[in-house]
Image (tube, rainbow, N blue to C red):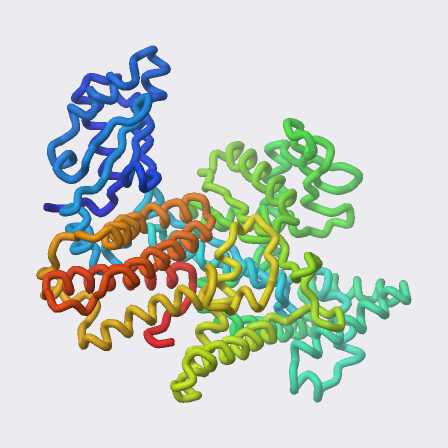
Length: 585
Ligand code: ARG
C-alpha cells in the first residue's frame, strides 16, 4: 500500500475531496486536521463544527455524510470514528503504520514529509550579529543557537536560506577605540591577544572621554574621519573587524555555524541616501527638531514615539541601516521572508521598523516579504539575575564552551571509564557544546533562560546528553547484533506490529513531520526538542518491554526496523537543532 509522505496533508486533501463529493459549498470547508490526543486516534478533523454552525446544520449528520464520501484508499488506511458533536477521528491501521516505517527510510524521505508552503521560497535569516571589537559573551549565545536551528528547520522544509551575520561594525564605539588605538596601543598585547587589547583600548578611550570633554570631542572627530573615508582610520577599523571576525568564527565552528554572507552595518552606509529620498518623497518621514523621523499615528505608542532615521546632526543610525538592509534583502536576495533573531529588548525597534517597511514598500509598489522578529528572553543565573563571573564580569562565550566541555568530560568519564581518554575527550567535545545548545533550544525561547550547569549536563531530563545517549544506545544494539540500521533485506522480513509498546513507538514516529511543521511555522525550535524527548521516552519504554534480540526472525526484523527508524528520526531531529550526534557514548 503506498503511504503518502505527509499524513496530515493527505487527510486534508481527502476530506476536501469528500466535501466536494458530498455537495458542500465549494472551497468553504476547511478540514482543520490536527494531531490528536493518542487516546482518540492519531489525527482529528475539527472543521465540521465551524462549517455546520455557520450554516445551522446538524454537525454529526454532516460528519457522517463526509465520512461516507471519503475515498476508499483513506478508509483502507485508517479507522475512522465520529466523536462528540462531530469531530472525525482517524487512527492509522497496523498495516499502514508498518508501511510508513518501511517507506520513511532516509532523511530525504523524512524531508519530503516535512515540506511546507514555503518550499521554493528564499528566506534571509539574520542571526548572531554581534558588535565587533568585543568578544562574544554569554548574551550572544541565544541568537546564534536559535538562529541556526531556525535556518536548518526552514531548509528542511524546502526553503532556500541565506544566513546573514549582520555584524555591528559601524557604531559610535569606533571613535573612542580609534582615539585610544592611536595613543595607547600596546603592540605586545596586540600580538598576544588582539581582542583583549581592543577591549582594553575601548575602556581606556571610554574612561578618558568621560573624564574630559575635549577627549570626547576628539573621539567624535575620529569617527567623522572614519565615516568620511580617512585611509588611516579605515585601516585601523578594518584591522579591528578582521580580528573580531576571526575570533567569532572559532565560536561558530564549535557551534556548527557557517554564514553565507556577513553584511554588517558598514555595508549599508552608502545606501542610506535612497532610504531618505524614498521615505521623504512618499511623505512617510518628516523633519522633527532637525531629525528625520517616522510616526505611526495608528499605533498607541508610536503615534508619539518617533522612529528616528536621521539624527539632528545628520548622522545615520541603527534604524537607517536596518531600513536599507530590508530593501537590499528584497532586491538582492529576492527574499520572500526575513527573520531577525535578537533579544526581546529590541522589540520596539523591530515593530517600528516593520511598520515603516510595510508602508514604504506599499507606497513604492515593492513586493513585501514576510517579516519576522524572533525574540528571546535573557540568560540569567540560578538566582534570576544576569549571568556573571564570580568577580562580576561578563562570561566570555569561549570560556563558557570550554567549561561545558570539561564538565561533559567528567560526566562521560564517570559513565564510561572503560573508554580510552582520547575517545572520552572527543565525546565530551560533542556533549559539552550540545548540552549548551540544547538547554537553550529545549525551552520556549520567549522565556528567560536560567543557566544551570547541573541541569544542563546531565543524563536525566530533557537534555542533550539524554538524547545523544538514546541514539548511541541504538547504535550499540546494532553493533552487538552485527546488524546495520536501515538494512533493506532485513526490513522486508519484518512482521506486523503486535505489542502495545511497538504501537506506541510507531505512532510517535509518524508524528515527526507534524513536530517539524509546528516548530518551523512558529519559528520555535523547542517544539521539535519536546517531540524528540517524548520519542526517546517511548523508545525506552519499548526497549524495556520488548526484547529485540529474539529468535523469531520476523519479530526481530520488525523490532530492528523500529530501532532503525527511531535512530533516523532522532538523529535527523538533533541535527536540525544544530547538534552533532554520537555512535558511542
Ligand atoms: N548588532 C546588534 C546587537 O548586537 C544586533 C543586530 C541584529 N540585526 C539587525 N538587522 N538589526 O544588538
